[in-house]
Each structure stands twice: as structure tokens, then as C-alpha cells.
Image (cartoon, rainbow, N blue to C red; front, side):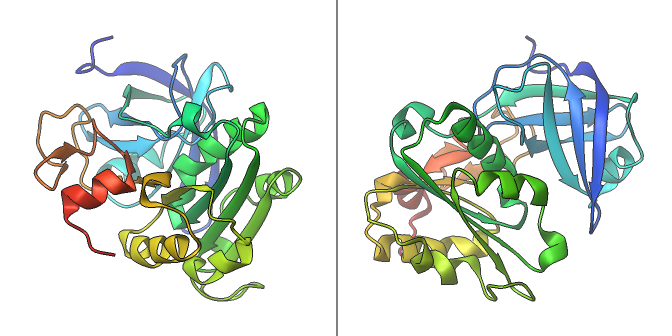
Length: 261
């Protein structure tokens, strides 16, 4: 595969969510790891990186979910089933699946951070490769909650804690309810969401005994080209988010960013 040239692919299904979010199912045969991303392109308009949110065992297609923000996503929103887009990838490092097999895993997602984590959740539950799975998912309000029907299915095999800044049973930030997960301290944690949530979430995870090297962050900010050529996503002068990430072990990421938590 030429990573510089996009492949043409057909949109075979799409679904709109509140607040200008849209799920696209794209016909393609690609092998990927949960946590990896693709570059989506529209000829003559541009391209953007986005996490794959479907699971690897779902063959013949991949899914992305985007929020209408700029000119490329605004144009993408006009497309529907039967239209075509371009894609490059998959790119980057995903979640360490082999390391997580047989382990207790806690997922902490904020807002659209559920997207790469959805890929992991669906794969883990399909193959039953985690000893236990706990999912904390926080959004601003109930209408912001994505994949509500899937959450019902996830509850059959995992502990799900849904949190809302406004409305809902649990009111607050997702970091406020980590204690409710009753962690034992031996868990691996996968975290994705707005950067502002990282510090309180990591502090709570560490308070519950989880070590730095067992925490993985999905960092998607700043990415552009997807292949480490533009230098747009360098982290701490040492790592490229699009190559070394977007999933980072927190111990390494903290060292690169000189973060003190």
C-alpha cells in the first residue's frame, strides 16, 4: 500500500447523532488494531485523521464517527450511503491487546473519547479476552451519549458507569466516579477524552493503586499527515503522535511531556 495515496471506498451505511455527530460505515478490507486511525479525504477539499471505532473482527468495513467542525467534516456530513470517500491507513500504534489478554481492564472515556475505546470494547467482549472489564463513560448531558443501545449490550458482560455533567443519574465528571468502580489496583487503564480530563482521571487511578506503566492514553491532538512527515504532532520533542501514538503508555508520555502528577 502506498501510504501517500488514498484508496477509494464506498459509504455503505450512516447514522446521525445529536449535536452534529455522524457515524459512517465504509466498505473496505483493512486489518487494524483498536486505537489506530485513518486519514479520510475528500477530493479537492482536504483530509483529516480520525479513529477507527469499529472492531477488527467486523470484516469488510470499518466505521468512523465525526463531529461537524470544519470544511472537510462539513462536506462529509452531506454524504450518504452510496457516496465515495478516500482513506489512507490504518496508522499509528493501538492498544496493547496481547498485554491486556487475561487482565482486569478499566476504560475511562470522556465525550468523543469513547470512539477508539469502542473499538477495544467490542473486540474484547467479542473474544472475551479480558478477565474483567469496567467502563466509565462521561458526557455533558444524556443527548451527548453515543451508542446507547450498545451500552445496554455491554452491561451484560461488563460493569458500565455512565456519568453526566448535567442531568442523568450520576452528575459530575467521569473522574468523580472512579471510586465507584471498586478497583483493586491490579487493573490496566485505557483513557481517552479531552486533555483537561487526563490529570484528574490519572490522579484518581493512581489513588486507587494503578501504576503509571499500566495506564494507556489515546492522544489524538495535533495530528495531520499521519505518517510523521509534517512534524505537526511532535510530543515533547521526542515522539510523533501519529507514529509512536496515538496510544501512549503513560510512563513514557509523562517523561516526554515532563508532566508532574
